[in-house]
Image (cartoon, rainbow, N blue to C red):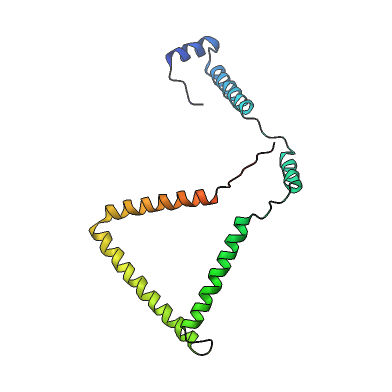
Length: 159
């Protein structure tokens, strides 16, 4: 606690404790009382709180797999397999051409990245403020959509 600057408080301290040592002792007692009051306002959890919670978690039934989880897994696997088949077919078959197609794709991807870098540099030098505002709005929209996607639909609180 810092030294008091209030004249009323100074007068009260002078009345209660006439010497400097007594004032310092009184201020220290006051600081300790404040700490104790703060501890009473926000008490510590019981010592076995964590073990009790972990026991309840272990006893709780596992969340059943929902229909939406199954369909999203099927969609992800289906898209992955179809993209792999398309990549094999576009490359000219299973033999010989896959490595060349993959290398060609990497080179085209590099060219696209270089082109997008130069486009972003030109946009940054000519219109930095609209670009930053647009990116901020895009980030906010993406985070909002992600939050809605991740939020559970039905939440049951058990005490």
